[in-house]
Image 1 (cartoon, rainbow, N blue to C red):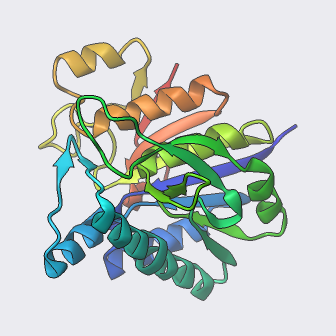
Image 2 (spheres, rainbow, N blue to C red):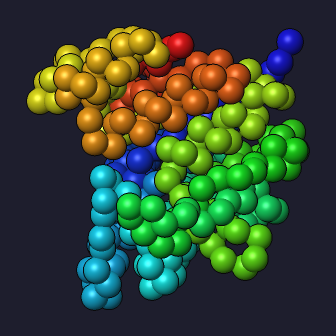
Length: 257
């Protein structure tokens, strides 16, 4: 029987504020067994860009990453945000290591081809070094993954954290029974975005097109749910979308085939 592994992806809005970060790390620390954390950090990147006079350009929630923005997100995601999380986990007795895709060649990617939009230095994942990550877990160290990959030719690439979480979950599913949890500000996928009590408890592959067509699922939630289905199709055992504050109870929206 495969050992269980929980992979938690948390949005930048949670990890960039001291109070919400502390609660998240406390709940994350309480998860038994093997676990990993994947984080964002977009708000910190945008705030620093504003201070430095670097324009932040977004398309459908995705950051256009030119050369200057790439330097900035590398500093913020791989440095400030990642190391704050690692330090917080160490303070709670959880031995953790912060990683970008370039570290130990954990996640390699290719620069996204230019089609209707030129996203710049944005990476599409090509491989995950699951053997290394499994070894880290065997050493009882918790990997903390920043949303950065590399192209193998010396260039870092900005990569969506939801995608990184899904790709890592898929790669680890050969070795572990993987539960993937997407945490953000809301308690799940909502029927009414203005009503936090309107959580949709269960979304199947057949429900998804209808919910997109009627606008219930829109914006950044569309690729999040798509990543969930991709992970399930590749062998991940279960996917949950919930709020960081519900990490201890695991209530939210279950995504299922």
